[in-house]
Length: 444
Image: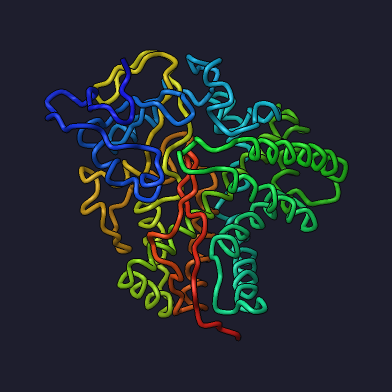
């Protein structure tokens, strides 16, 4: 009989003392601060089978060593076809609506050799040269959004940092990178907003219909955009073209990229490329506002023109309270042993990045925010062949956003009690629903 969230730790490793009942998972209280529960699991049940709010049973991996192992284990497939309970789990794993919208063939759902082929094509959009060339656009977007917060009528000096800044910044940035025309980008902002709103506490237990509708709208738009770009492909120099055009060109040059694969790739870059950065900026600023000494240290470093602390600081914010709480779904293709537990063929496995990145066996004082931390091989963007392809862009956006906020709004502060803030539900991501702030407007 499998453990449930409120049962005793029958799956504790050999030699581990009895610890009483396991903590409750996937509640409002858990969403606000999951780290004590994860600490309990790391110590008493590091590979723990539980029933998720959706009804699907899965293994949670919480220690750093086993997490890193699982992320790179070829026996753990990303393809949902390997789920042993396909009928039971249909529509309950992965992104809502992706199956019905024919968007399954993206990097989060496939294994080599298809994964290798598609990742090679898309990686051309995330080269250091291309990201560096994109930096001025990210800065322009950042300043424009801060200007809007400062200049809004009747509300100067107050803002919801999530909805007015952290959310639109990565949406517009990834749209630019993909080649979505500026006049269409607000539609993507609306669809992405619907994805964020249609979740609730319970980490996966919220209504999924709103997300599925947004996915369907995105799919229809992307199909039409791909046709338009294919028709005008010869009008743009190859070196200057956007990512969707590059994917079309690769397909037309015999790289065996189907239209469904191109649409799915554009979709997953939009879907995965915006919420992770929303949460990086939101969680990161929230952590800094709650740690004034660290925030002051960073502000002084930025004012002095030193970017070193900003670089290590972003990595520490990713580790301390990162944007991705659990890595996306994996399914055992054969029986294997992980952390002393027998994982049956077809079992889902979820690596808890948030727990692994606070493992005291790997990080000194893991519950302390230390922007100067050097030995910081966190798993915030994964590990192995599925390491986040967009991590360089997310880091650029995170560094630009935080540095500019702390420079232009130096006295920015929380405008709500921490206990009054609410975290979004959803099994994979970790982020605030809103982040009310106050500041003294800075008008150049």
